Image (cartoon, rainbow, N blue to C red; front, side, top):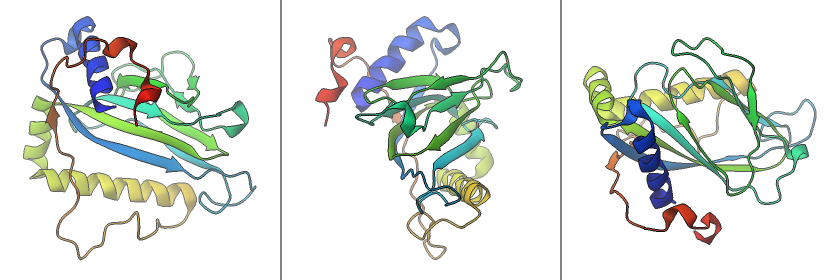
Length: 213
């Protein structure tokens, strides 16, 4: 999957002027599962629907350049919900036109700018919803962000703190200990930036993603 995403990003770089010549690095893949549910009045994870509030992935020059999302939802149907609602915007985050809803269909790969041009949210998921997200970083902006934050661990720790606060605001409760870092731990899992290796599969554009494990 990493390889396929890399080939898509490389192809996009060749066609999008503002990405041409830029040093792009890949972060770790992150798998997310929304438990989903249809119980009215219940919280996410307790039988109620799950969603994610409107946001953009790079609101403050944190280095994220592109967001790649791959969906793994076999048998998805409209009643399952969980669409990604995108609000096309200008560089300052001002909306341009109406929103667009993207269905999280199995084997679908999305790629979009991580900055204020693409605010998005996950609508109520009524069934389990799986997605694998990868952020592709601008090496230059990432280095500048690291210099400001102090080190890579600080950047990731800050991101986790923001996610926890968003969870609390969304559900009214704190995340479980599985999600929340142990305050006694000195080490926080970091994003390991990886250079994109280049074209390694001549038929990548025609490969069936379902063949991947």
